[in-house]
Image (cartoon, rainbow, N blue to C red):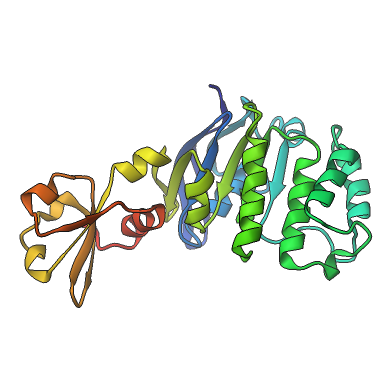
Length: 285
């Protein structure tokens, strides 16, 4: 399939931070989960894709078009949700529909109302009367009501209870039923990504550490644990990261034969959060 987003050698420098030659693709019909610690560069990457800030160097192509030269056309086909609702608190959904109708040529009032009903959002109340979960649902309804081909979501489920998060994730999976639709989903809730993401990209200190299919990523790593006496015996070069504790150590490895060579090791299948933490915070060897 074609790539909906193609990023090549993208750089942006701030005081104390640099997004450094980032290259990343988002394939049509898929969900890419973007992970990394706060300040790693996830939001900067999203802002550069949306042309909210100007890049220092590199290229960003969305739907095969340069995102600066063709900014107006591209924005017609993108829906965006940030972690904080961007609508003024005195507005109601009716006001938002009127405003969005003026921005998007394909805005669909009926579709917007259907999302409001599905999310049980009263259309006559002001946003300031909404809970955080209701505000996020409203943002998602507004982002999807012009039938975008691409959703860019920056922490859309942050601070929500599990039931609301699952409801929102179901909406995203339904959206992907149309194989022309795609999602870039930045989230620190890695359990959400395990449910919906096709691929996972880790950004750390402004650099892309990996971008892999989710199942390949998880199946390609092993979490091993052992006593302190084993730590000196296991070759350091076989380990991606080590964390010591009072009982011994735990480490991440790509070499699954370690458990045959050292049968005393306890092994577990890691989750995305554990993989991310060892790549970014583990004592790399």
